[in-house]
Image (cartoon, rainbow, N blue to C red):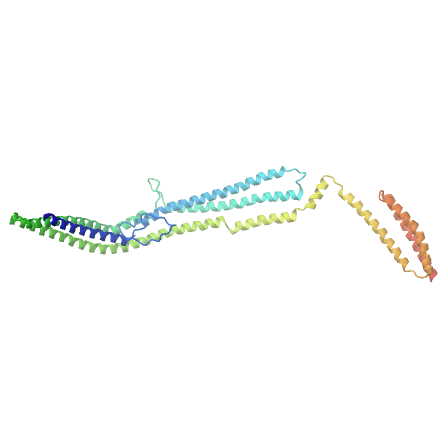
Length: 428
């Protein structure tokens, strides 16, 4: 019988404990914030907790302090990019020096005049581009120096050690602690009261069991049973007092929690401004970098370099001029041969034109006498033409025979003119 009573009382206690634990679990679940499962965002120790509960305000302080790591990463990235660009500029300069030397070592018999100058201008464009890249490096270096100063100001190093913290993190921490101090004391009070309540319930449970056992045992004296009942009532009163304290403390806790939440939100708004300053600073440095890395001046400079190079090659490099330069340098008498050939062609053209003029005049004559004179003139002309043909075969070798030929032709033409004038007078 006694075992049944104990079992019943234990089941009652276990039921109370399960109800209490269930309530705590539900409360914890209600404090969790909805979270969108974004694979690009990593988890952390604060992500599933309500900011206004317990000491979860530490999340914003950690956010501010860990911003230093982000800033350091950005600085290192900028420095690495600057190193790449500086190496590029140095490589272009060394490339120019190397190929200037190579150009000087080219065989002069094959590398000369305007084509060689075009090669030089092409090689020189690398040096101009290196200067342009170096200007870009100087601007990026200025961006890095500016951002470095901003980071040092926002995250000063502690006096002892190498840790860098946000310049307002300690003040924010103190503000949250002060705002939460009253609530923290109430939380501690409630924790103690709940512990007292637990002990009071256990004492009451023991007193209930004792009274139940005495009531079932006929051998127990009445005074002993009365003392057991008094103890039971005392334990019940103690439990009720503690529960009243808990109720008042919880009510006060709710009120204080509302006060803390208001103060905490004010402090958080202040932290938002600090965080906005950090984010704006990052935005500013990224824009400054982009403007330094790719500016309109840089693009225009590249256009000028290569447009001038293309214009020089198109207008200054001349293959014919180079060929003439080479021929003159190596004493090829190209111009003298060309002049002699041109003179022979002019002489042949003069002879042909004069013969055509004579023939045209002869065809204009009419009548019998005109035909006879034409025959006579042609008889006199044919020997001279034959002679001319013979002279022309030999005139290709010497300039003297060419002059004799021209004098004979002139005499023949003058005889023809005299005959023509005689015929004209006879006809009239």
